[in-house]
View 1 (cartoon, helix red, strand yellow):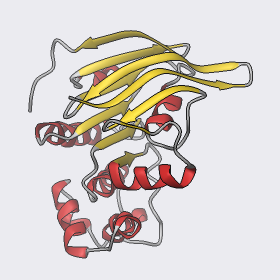
View 2 (cartoon, one colour):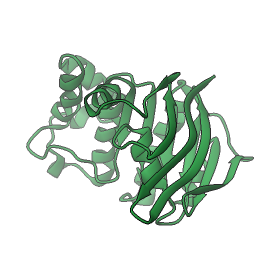
View 3 (tube, rainbow, N blue to C red):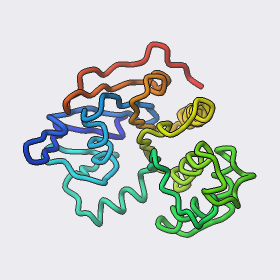
Length: 225
């Protein structure tokens, strides 16, 4: 069953067509990698799926609801309630501990619960770093805090924008192992990446060029966790 559908989506900035009549669907529980060179439209697509921008034309359906015409206030609520976001730059609050950074997401959703936040950190292997500030964590650990924060409100879909872009090989493998477990648990994952190794471990790869999908294929080497 499709959780996400993009129907004839275009996004135009002046004379630039960042997305050009793009259509795709993502099933519940599917793990999709979106790839392509700089300027291909990856980030624009991520922003539209993540309710941070709206298309110039076309429809975006999330769980059967067309979100492309929603107000900014409504999009904020949808993003808060249904979407988990993981960023390349982490976006952690530098004066809050790891567990407090996770609890920030709870605050905007419902009510902070330290026990649940600690359990989310344990899920990504960081229970022993819960009281550390971002400056006391490695890049890989900060990214895992971001993943815990994205998962704390049990989103319907997790969007990750270059989640391994700032990580060394060892930490990249840790993050990918977490993604494999999330997929095994039934989480719907959409990962934007320029890294072929990250794309290859996904269930399906969509390649963009000049705002258009030029390839949409299942990965023959994909292995269930």
